[in-house]
Length: 260
Image 1 (cartoon, rainbow, N blue to C red):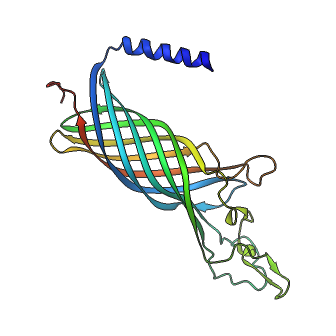
Image 2: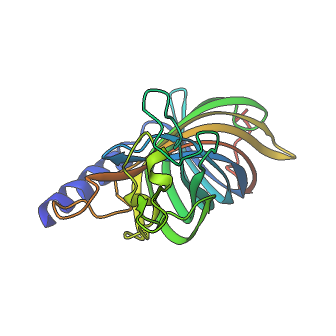
Image 3: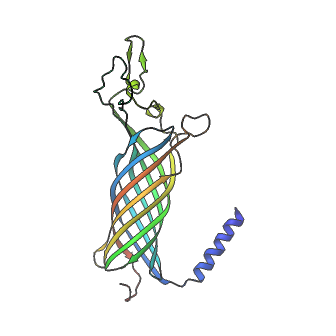
């Protein structure tokens, strides 16, 4: 590991000393807000739709270079995000309806999980920097810290499949999928990590600031539940689709009259 770090340091030093692009030293800060559609990739599979939630926070951007026509920058965010999953439960079209059940009753279950998320993204932009439009792509790692969660359901997930006293079937027999452990399990892993990538469009005005609209996808590499041979789930990672709006204003701006 020490040798690898030394090699990376040497390569970075050579890259900096051999820089052929146009130098930049722009630093901008601002806020972002948007909407998240999320689910969890469970193995065994859990039928799902998308859980909707809000996201928002602080954005920092440092622009360091224009290399040929590509504007290079690093973007960091600190966001509060509402993510989770929403189950598709009632689907008995191809199954016989058990005795003593009401097929007209729609079962509902969703879990909203609140996270503090910190993405750090490498960004490439093409277009105007100070006045006009710029398209951009950004990619990088993201970490998340669990805050809390809440369940929205119209049934008690802890009740048994069959009540021997009333001799009636319970909610479990109305489900097309009998993978139900996730309904009552607490979140085990409080730390999340993965890869985020986004595409967007920015409009800049040197007097007002920068306005950005972005679509982003996050793929979780961690699991919310244990995934050893003794655990129920082999995989339980997040997938998030994010649409967000960001406003930035310049704190430090490179003094160069040729920058457009």
